[in-house]
Structures are given as structure tokens and as C-alpha cells.
Length: 385
Image 1 (cartoon, rainbow, N blue to C red):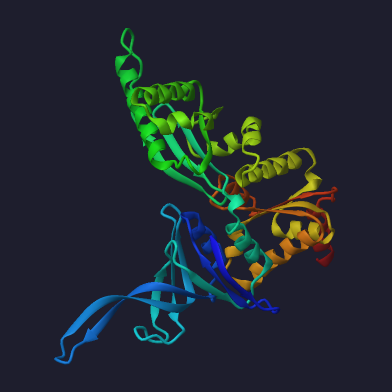
Image 2: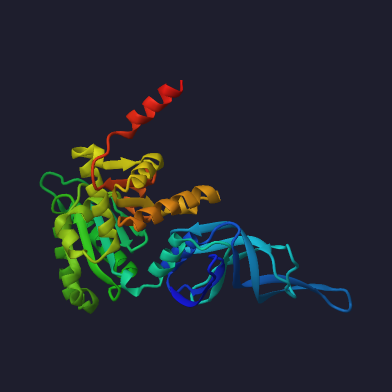
């Protein structure tokens, strides 16, 4: 993402002009947009024209519209973002108040204006425009007959390809059918890697499986690379890393990213940091439950007691359409930062983010233990009765 212009007043109103440069920037933009914002961007509109003879024709014209945002639709697989709203600026092709849907395009600038730019949104822009954030990882999670090729970017986990091949069982005295099917499977996975992984960007490729599937696949890939003289694979051999996983399904990704060997290799990536923070929270919940809180009410009380060391919060909560609810989460984040705590914003498109969402989307590791708040709540409610 490139920031072209930032014009924010002291009362937090204002606008920014951004250019999305890659697919992931659409995810950042989706998190910036809210109902009620105004969005100015280039778009294509079908316009009807009437000639002097009375015949009606239609043509498609490119024009720049400013919409008051009403609905936001994001397709996570294609990384496409469509914004629907009413036109709020006079235009020669579109009447005031007419509905239009803008599909934001890569490398075309857009201007976003808000009535209130809060700290969370400004941090999101800073993160999206920081090139250091793009330490990307690819993973191939596999078992016999099933493989998932996944890209782990700083903001999301994208399933790029799923390979499924039926592998017949070994029969007594004849393994040829089994071996042929395995070769077909390995070939399909290798082609998926070459098609979907950009070796110039990706820093590390994790190959994970139960048993020896990963080792056999690794041997097959580089035997084929030598035979075909595939320079891309041969030059990037050091980027491949073999790790154990319990299955070939996508959810095993969390377990892979928790592996200490993987964590040290991926120490500069945001995804590994998120997984470690969640792991620390679960350990704390198990061993010292008075220092691990989740749920907005409990976490807010811990924040008021200046007890929060690390706040874990899902970006899904900041897409809430109710302004009061959203500002409640923003106040919590600001409160923790002002009191010297760390804030980890989890992407709801990451495996770790999905897990945090199941824990209400907000959790905290505390500096010191606080007695269970639920007891205090029970006492206060019984006193009221």
C-alpha cells in the first residue's frame, strides 16, 4: 500500500489517499472502511444516451464518484473489494443520491474520508504502508492423497490450492498401483507449488505431514528438479523446511507455526508472533488462571486496574457497525498502550485469529494476578437482589 496524501485535522476528521499495490492491501482497505464513510474512486458506469432522432443507446464510461458507504463486500479468496453506496457529489453521468457499486482496483488511487479517525485505523494504515511487514511464508500441509498449499502473509492465511488424489492401498506382492498414484500425487503438488508460490517474495516454504510423506515428497521434488533442470526449485532449495504435523488439513497450520524450530526461523514474521502470543495465553490460563482473562467485561476491569501486560484482540471487533461498540474496543486498546502494555492485533483470516474469535475475540495476559472477577460479580448481583 502506498500513502499519497494524509490530511487529518485536530478534531480527527479528514481524509487519506491510498494506492493498493497488491491483493493483500484490499484486506487492509476492508478493515479501514466503515458504513457512513465517504469513498472517492475511479469506476465504470453504464450510461444511457438518447440521440436527436430519439433512439436510445448505452455505453460504459469511466468516471470518478464519491459514495457514502452503505455496504462493504470482501471476497477473501479472490481478494476483491466491492463498496456500495449513494452518490454524494454532482457528476455528469450519475445523479445525486443514485446507488452505485465501486470495485476497488489495484494500482488505482482512492480517497477515504471519515468523521473520526481513531488510533486503531491510523495504526492499520501505518502497518499496511510498511514494507518491512511483508516477510511472507508459504506452507504445504500434506498427508497421503491430500495436500493444502497455503500462503501465510502478515494479515491473512490464503488457501491457494487443494490437491486430492485417491491412493490405492498396497496389495500383497504388488505395490505398483500404490506407487504410481503416489507419484501422480507428488507431481500435482509440485505443480501447485510452482504455480502459486512466488519464490522472489516468499522467505520460507514449510512442508509438513505426519510420518514420512514430507520426506518422500521432498526427495521426489528435487529428483524431478534435477531431471527437468528446473532452476527455480534448485536455487530455492534452502528455503524448504520439513516439519511434523498431525494431519494434512489446513487447521494443522497453527500446530506447525508453534514448533520452536519454525518459530526461530520465522522470528521476523507477524504470523509467528501471533501464534506465540496465543500459546502464552493458553499456558497462563492453564497454570495461573488469575493472570489470563478473556471476554470484554473482564478484560476492561483488568485494564482499569492497570494490570494488562499483553492484550490480544481480533480485528473483526473493529468492523462492528455500531459506533459505540467499536469505540469501546478502541478505548480499551488506547488504555492498554497508554499504560505501557503490548497490543497484538490478530487477523481473523489467520488460524490463530479464528481461535481468538472463539474466545470472544479479546483476551489479556496480566502483569499480576487478580482474583476471579466472576466471584465479585456474583457478590454484587446477590447484594442488589
